[in-house]
Structures are given as C-alpha cells and as structure tokens.
Image (cartoon, rainbow, N blue to C red; front, side, top):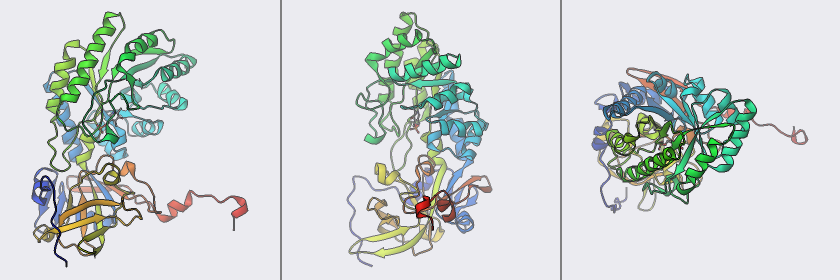
Length: 447
Ligand SMILES: *Cc1c(COP(=O)(O)O)cnc(C)c1O
C-alpha cells in the first residue's frame, strides 16, 4: 500500500475511543464488537443486511427526559413538540409519545404520521412556509393545537378556510428576528434574507390585523432561528429577547398573547463541537421570556433523535488509487445525504473489535453512486477494511432516513429499533420489485 498522505487539519479528528466515550449508548465488546445498548450491531447487519438504520429507544427516552428535566429545573411552564421531520419513523414517534411528547409538523403527511403514532393534533404545531389549503383544512378538522403562520397572504388564506369551516384557527405568528445563528448557510433560518417568518418590523401590525380577521384566533408568537446551533446561546438570547420585547408591545396594544414558541435548533456534537447543554437553553429562555408569565414551547428535532441512530454499512471494495485509499461502502448519498448536502462530518466506526486496535491510515469513505459528491469522509484515519467488513456512521438518527431517495435505483434501506437486549425491524428494506411496482407504462408503450 502507498505511504499515507499527511492530513492537514486545524484539529485532529476524535479517535475511535473518543467517539465511543462521548456516546453512552455505544460500547465496544471484546468479542461482539460495537454494541448499541446491549445489541451487537454486527448481528443486526448479518440478520437484516446493510445498509440499515438502527435507532436506540433508550437514547430517545434519555434525551427527551434530559430536556424535560432542564425545562422543569429552570421553573418553566413548557411543552415539548418533537420536530417529526428529523425522523418520522412510527417506532420513534411512539417512543417519544410514551414520554409525553407533542409534535411539530411541516406537512399534512407528517401530521398523519404523528397522529398514526398516537400524538393528537391537540398536542401538535403545524409549521412551514407553504401550507396547502387541504393541509390547513386537515389540521383544523383534527383540532390542531397551533398553526404557525408566516405571511399576510397565509394569514388571509387560513382565515378564509377556517371561517368557511365555522371555526377560528389558533394561529401563532412566526417572526424572523434577523439574528445569525452561526450555522451552515443551508440550515440557518432566522436572518432577514431567509424565506422563513415575517420580518420583525412587520409582525406587530400583522398580529393586530389577525385579531380583526373572522377565522383567526391569535394565540402567540413563534420563531425558529436555525438548526445545528452550537455557537453558544448568543443567537438564542438575541432572538428571544426580541420576542419578549414584541410580546410586551402587543400586550400594551391590548392584543392577547397566550404563549411563545421558541422553535428548535439545538445542536449536537458530531465531531468535536461543544454543543450547548439543554440547561443553557432553558436558562436563556428563563432569562429572556421568563418574566412574561406565559407558557413556552420547544420544537427540538435533531437534539433528541440525532444521537439515537446509526447507519450500518458494509465495505464493498477497498480500492487503492494514486496516493489515496478509497473505502467503497454499500451505503451512499441516497441513504445519508448530510455529508454531500451540508459537508457534514459523521463519526465512522468499524463494528469488528479487532479493527479498533489495528493500525490506522487515511482513507476516503465513499458510496457507489455515480456522483463525486457521494463522499462521506476524506482523509479519515481508518484501519485496513477488506470487503465484507461492517462500519457504522454515528449520529445518523436525525435528517438521515427521512432524506433518503432511490437515486441510482437503490431501494430504501431497512430501519431497526433497539431497546435494551431486543431489536426489531421497524421498516423492512424496500425491494427492487417495490421500486418497479409504482410505475405505469402509457398504453402506446405497453409491450
Ligand atoms: C426543522 C424545524 C425544527 C427542528 O429543528 P432541529 O434543528 O432538528 O431541532 C423545529 N421547528 C421548525 C419550524 C422547523 O422547521
């Protein structure tokens, strides 16, 4: 094998041992290799095949409870509305429902999914920049807890639909506070140039206008400033302080405000980021909005589901190029899109215990899809991994399976849930027949 190329980086990647130490649900067993909770991941890879998503029920519960405890500890009256778009698996939603979670949805499809998992519409927020009339109708017919409206045009549409149904829609106004959350450009949402929310300067007038419409019951204000926020509390603090100021102004004008929706966005450490603890977020909410005496809402997605999932894959080929080693996995960008979409870094661990002790050399870890963007990692220190070896992509529980496609006619991967010593397939692998079954030929092409 050619001599490994030196890798220039500001900081070294975390070692396999560092990655394990920071992830309590994962451990390395001397004989069984990498375990998620008490289940050897190699057993799932052998029995279910690869690529396969695996979710830890225990991690979902532990993280939900940690967030709950942080909010309670700060003395906040708060409800948690899990953002279903991070992971809308029925099994994941059921585990969180059993913990008491409500939902945040961004489509009629997600509303149907969360209701199917037992989360009532009365505990659900409907966000999103382009709700279709039939989605608004569905939400109102089901008794949605809150619709987050984002524009004067949308408010008019909601009012007309609700009035036609003889109801008043509970609407919160999503305000764009014009703060920079310091995240990747594709997941920042709270700056003036982003498509989300109504400009801070226009919000008061629109809220007053809502109160005069026949089909609207204005219930509060909402914001969501971005995702994977790890740069501390400054952006949250600035945004929530502006919301508090706005609530005071609305009240002074005699307008009713029942609650404040603080959105989601709390980040997690994928590599070596120092992500804020939920206690810091709870403290920031308390410091900025606590004096209003209103209940608050949180819409976390990634923070709960991200660390609860891994994506298992097999090595198909270990290919030596000129001065570069490529590990070609059977998972690809159609499965886990985050690295090619956001240049995201995911920890990657071998499942076999022997490979954790073997010498390391840089490798590019890629998928088999015909795109250069189908690259999971470059210059990653990895052991020799011959074909058939299993690997796990860490922190793949949020914005993983939900972003999958069938590009390159690749069936959707299987999904599995682990709970203690048990595991079960919660979505079987799609088959090639499934892919073809949805297609129709025009009669002039029929054989
Ligand atoms: C995506 C989204 C969330 C969840 O974001 P996370 O970064 O996963 O916490 C919450 N609220 C709204 C409106 C969203 O669009």
